[in-house]
Image (tube, rainbow, N blue to C red):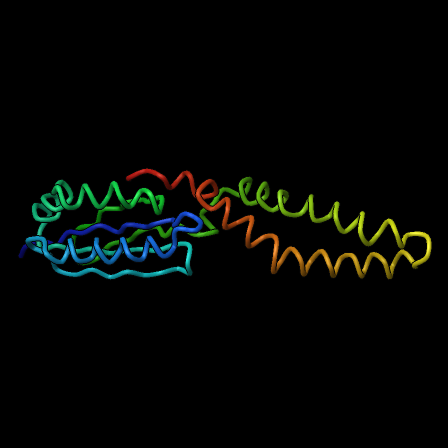
Length: 178
């Protein structure tokens, strides 16, 4: 019995390229479906930022043939405009792959990105809220109010934007074919 072969391709989608990535992924799907020995394709989206595609072929030779085809190479080059990617080969009916996500990002990059959002926000809250009211409001009330403003602003406004902007850098270690 011939062993099936495939790849798992994880894409870290570049900020502001989400829709272009979706269109590109459709073209890539059409291309792989037309390849000799194509067996299946499954795309798993992890929110708007990360997408995983599992592609399987009837044999390793057919997979290798598709991976060096002009159609694949052209689409792969175009895809680099929209995302970083990792490619993990698989063989046989059972495979284990690593899925990139926030847990796989280096902690120091997460800390740096968070600090880039926290520090300027903390300065603004301090200048706008804390300093003007420091002499007239109880420090516990002021601390409570400023921490609520800081937490809400960071959670729903600042950190999502910072993380979206820095996403390619935060996942940069995944920017290679394995």
